[in-house]
Amino acid sequence: MFTYFLRCGAGRLRSLSYGQRNAAKVAPVPTGTAVAIPTKEDFRARIHTVVKTFTPGTPVSSLAELVGREASLRELLNIVASPGEHAFIASARGTGKTSLVSCFLDCASGAAPQITCVRTNCENSSFKAIWSKVLRRILARLGMASTQFDKVDISDLDVEFELVSVKTPLLIVLDDFDEILNHTELAQFATLMKVVSDNAMDISFIMVGSPGAATLFKRTYILIQRHLRIITLNRLQPVKAQEILVSRWRRCGLEIMDDAMSLAVELSCGLPYYCQVIGKYAALLALSQNRSVITVADVAGASSHMDEHILLMSAISSKTGLEQT
Image (cartoon, rainbow, N blue to C red; front, side, top):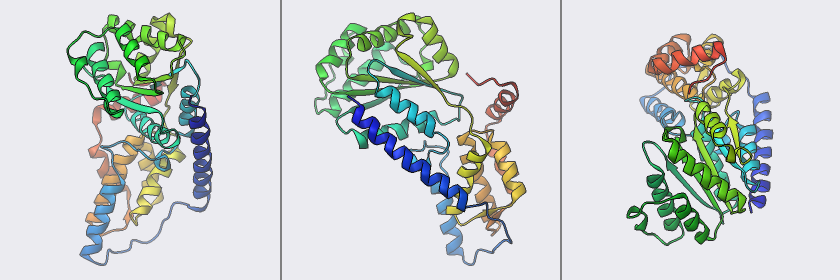
């Protein structure tokens, strides 16, 4: 069902990767003498550009902005295109799980508009509450909105019946799946996944959560082991973290000194989220002093906006090889 989607999505990825490789070759990190911002209007314009360019509070939703995740996105495309297989995207906080899913859904809606994509958050929710939301959203997308699912206890068999009745390819994303801790409810999800796969239904599940939750879910429920594939997002290589920072700073008309770049890459710990935080606040600090070149002091000052607990855990895990759960 997703063959056309896979072919189109993979083609877009190949084109994107080629363009990024060439861009990296012809665009070295600029350095040079600081240039004063000539007017107050230009100063305000650059601040506005920085705020719009660096968005740590929202996920990336464009393939062009998804740096260093081409292989993971391609793997996700392959899983969704394979009948009876489902994906669990697993990684530590700040590695870009949400951005990967957002870009994937953007790719899916463009390449295969016949697929109905639904996304919901599992935080502090039961099996019934989650599927009440999912089913209502599916029906709403198809112009058949209903509130009946708020009034009944929904079992995995009820959900199966409702999904079959939809008669359209479905792509269902379950964010924060690691927030589901009740074993009985996890077993319901496992049973539903098994039934969907065994009956070759045109439905793919994408779960998002921590590596520990993904491994435990797959190991605990043997019936889904051949249906569930785990995609682990590793930390970005330094060159990719630098690519994120340089490309965005350049859009804002800013340059960076070599030593400042080295510090920014080191502080990012290979996490796209921290690249966005450091990039944003270092740029704002430079502009606040009417400079167009980012210095070590700017990067150091930007680190104060990073979550100290997550930063500490990131430093520890990068040394020990362990990831946050």
